[in-house]
Structure formats: C-alpha cells, structure tokens
Length: 33
Image 1 (tube, rainbow, N blue to C red):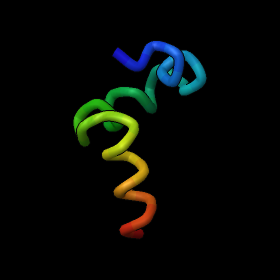
Image 2: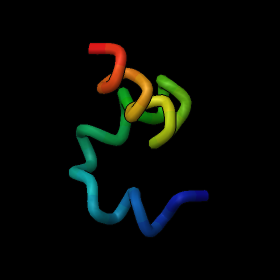
Image 3: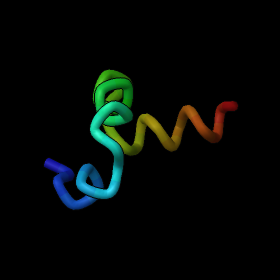
Image 4: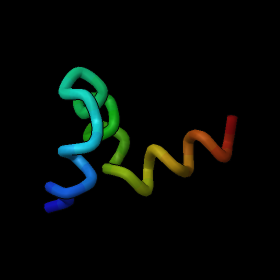
C-alpha cells in the first residue's frame, strides 16, 4: 500500500518493517527505543 515509502527503503529492511505493521510500526519502535 505504501509503495512510495517502500521504494525509498532497502528491500532487506522492508521484511522486518512489514512484520511490525508497516512504517508506523517502525516509527513506533524507533520512538520506543
């Protein structure tokens, strides 16, 4: 769904990001850490 954001992120990095619920999930993790 977020093809624009996904295109700016390396392919290997997309897998864990998807697993955590997408870009918002990634941001949430970064803020938590």
